[in-house]
Image 1 (cartoon, rainbow, N blue to C red):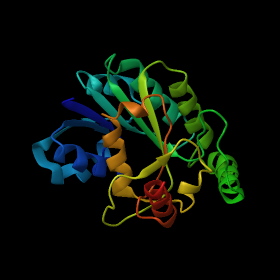
Image 2: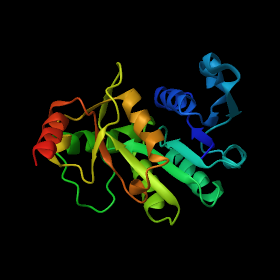
Image 3: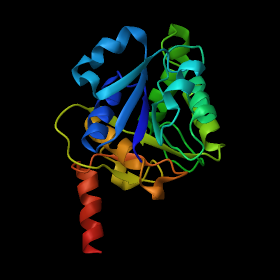
Length: 232
């Protein structure tokens, strides 16, 4: 795998993914809104930018051409089917054998077997109803985007992130198949480590057609689980 595309490259997660991908020797192209291109000036000529909305099908089609992998930030912004439009464009135009890695939150469920805390369910409910009213976010659209991905026969992975924080990385996050697994109890991941997992998923075939829920490996719940695994 040599050339990858990052959809949503100018955001914090996108820039961290770019750093990790360049460090690992990938050729990186990306899509971001024209007004955000300046945020990427520090990468210089090491990356190629396709300015445009991430749900602009024509822009996405050009950007993913010839790419072995596509990393997509499924942002739930606005109320105009932004996330589902982005996901559909990637599914439609990525190369047939490309690895497609999507990011979202824990609220996404692939098989209905996740166990959500009362707090998480309340926050999800709040954003589902208030977000569209305020015309800021639409979690229902992000859920629709994930539904389309899960129904696809493409080589996809949907990485579900916990709460995020800035700071030096702790290494590759730990993951579980379902939210509610004790390993995830700490509910915190460094943003740079989330990005690292996204890049890692490009070449980890165990993650094909999976929706791993991730947690920082230095968190208390992850350390406990790792210690138990070693003792076992």
